[in-house]
Image (cartoon, rainbow, N blue to C red; front, side):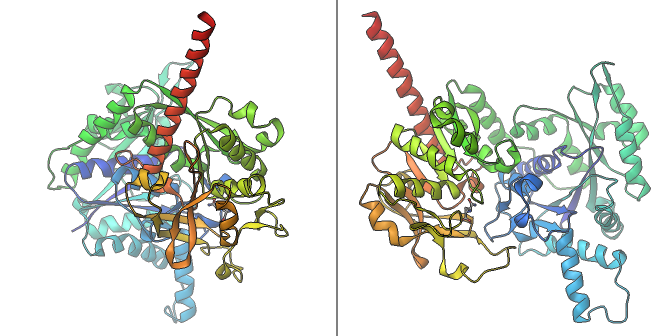
Length: 549
Ligand code: GLN
């Protein structure tokens, strides 16, 4: 039978609950257990697909085309397992289901209420995980929001009820909390944690384990105090100190005894932990000598969460190449003002990520031109690929005013345009091209070389497509289509064969990158950037050598 670990958060938001839940999952997996994760979000949107990146950060797309919370990305990266629609549930989905049932008459004669109807629907989504074809040993359920929020109360009530129904040996409550260190007083403060646990206990939940986020190590006597006031054994007060890489978290939790505790409290039949993959990753990161600078040119650059998976995939690519990466976040609107030379001069590789709307796209077009002309490795992802196509259409193929019909509906040359099937679509939620599609690769291309395959599957989230009417004109000028979705003849990858590494992809490869399985295109891109760095260092040596002789 599947056992449940419920993860709640207290004191403040942004404590890294998603990473904590993922790390717990990876530890249990390393002990031979099968694990899944599920996130509950308390907002009323049906999914984050219609939210601005400023509100929500990245929208993470799964193979089955669900638009989900960015924590689902951490789940996949830490577990190496593909998630799907059922791994992210929002209050909006719960209420949507209930209202549809009510209109159908399923509750005929009764008043529909938060308890039991909303809580029952929440529980049924959790229990659905146990009815998978091959049920997992442990389901880790993360409750979004902070304990004390009005919005998350029904979720907390649902997990309180589940413990009664499933019993203590089958359920575990882990509360992630903050133990602040007051620099001026040089003191660690336990009161916020005490209050947050008091809040949980007032609604009938006694946490079993406290994961205490702290900037400094928590002394034994402070752990004892927290345990005493929060009614938790001292060894179940586990510190979660800030670390430089999120991939150190499983190792840190293991040192703190967390997996032993979970295994014994849930009476799981588990083997010893094999953390060699995590250790090897850390060793590779620490062994890196050269530093490579990658410029990410986007319009949400001051909000890093908007590019979470891009950032992680670049990091994985760096580790795979034995280099450390400096990411230079470049606001594309600044390129429009200051020009690409000023902002991209020191970068060894230029990446343009996905995005929506016209703002900042001219700066992206300028960045793509700079990369093409200066032969700097270039990786365009979704909107980034579209901007590269617009740039080549205007500058290589002489198609004046070429654009995407998303940015200029009146453009004389809509090199990026809506698919016929998208023309009548007026609803915004869940109507893009979403999820995994196959892509057939052209032999001899950078892409085929990187993947070492003839066909791959990648995830999508976009409405606009390369317009095949312009393929011949662009190919005549040196662009090459190197990946297609044959069923609809959709262009998925474009390249410049006569360039060290210039690849644009319509899909989102960053969503498939894992620390121990870096995405081949990110690995190839960073490799090319590393070579660019070496080339420049060589050129500098040659210049100074010449000056000396
Ligand atoms: N806005 C573009 C489209 O809808 C690109 C989307 C993206 O980059 N995810 O096609």
